[in-house]
Length: 241
Image (cartoon, rainbow, N blue to C red):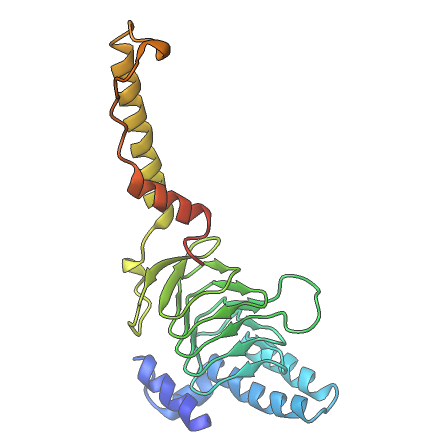
């Protein structure tokens, strides 16, 4: 597992030069080393010591991982400062976690209360994934997003709260310059709806003799808003998450 973690860093970080540099200068890798030991002691029931090792790791690396968390192989915590991973969190193989990420709970409930990440997940800087939710394989979570509901595999999630903006995303990277701005799209759709309604109102005002009870069978063209209807409904409902 140690060799897999090292190899993953060299594959994903072009700044990695040699194994000595990674061993002594990569706090995310160091935090995982501490965690592997603390987790083993935690599993065999040793009291206090696993939490103390976790605390020392937090002091030295800025990464807080509860010894009860299950971390898969090939996980890369890039930069690492401010990362928090809760007790019942599960991180799948080859996940990539950037600085400031929280895999936390939403209250004081007992049992499984932290998220489960699938394999090859990318969690952008500052993202918060909260509660006992399932994040599918190859999911990309944008920087600063707050994810509160289950996310299907092969999707990209952005925003507060997090919403799916791309399906069947098989890319290995999280390209923030290509992530959709869902809020802006919905505001644009609402703006176009208002303009269409204003135009319709202007047409009615140009024909003051036509009162509602005198229209009869005369039909007034309605703005075509079927596409925007679906977009707005998806946005308000979480865009399919």
